[in-house]
Length: 254
Image (cartoon, rainbow, N blue to C red; front, side, top):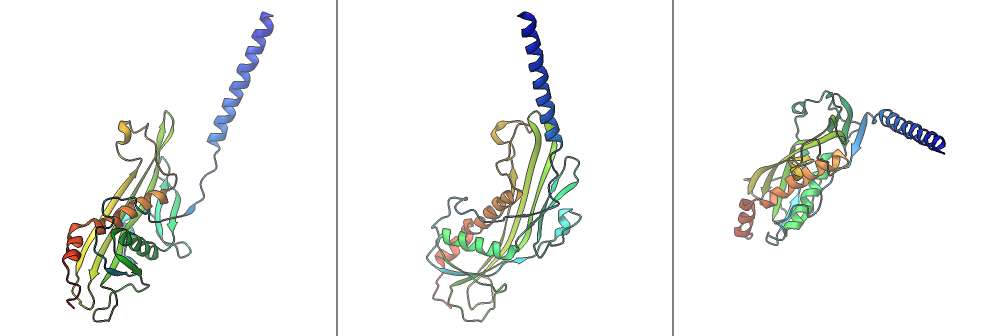
């Protein structure tokens, strides 16, 4: 009886060891990611709180945003568009080598539509246009026209050294917009400014844990970049100088 129990126990240990080795082999042989990925970049409604319904009931025409980024600043070796889709980031391995290049649908329409959503949250009645530039002196039924350009839009997802619970993965996204608001038919800007946001996933110092124990919130780098986009867009209407200008503006003075 004792000999049979010992033999059974030994067989169980051999089986468990085989399962562990098989599991390790599965992890080590995980397929490499495809060389390119098209990420979904979008605006997250009501992610940023506090400015909703704080603007007067005015109409604003939001023009198509222009992509004015200097991609040489990203340090990436290849930033050419892929099938007409702009480059928006990279995924790096633990040695810093690029394992996947990230792309998005054209940025102009994404940002324009995001600004329309954010302006609507602020209390304005917002419309969109396919025009990219304001034309002074032209009759316009809207009380304001917003022109914008994207000067930064980039995300980097990096795998660091393995921690006690697996690989440490960090993502950082940067987004910057330059905005000019006009009051037709005048050529002098009514307001202009720039907004910028950098978002880390996992957030720096999240939960008071060490860097090896923190876990990211988002699965896809495009989601992290979407947070930076959303927060940067919301900053336009969080600006008290723009809000006060509109609140004090005599819309009949043209």
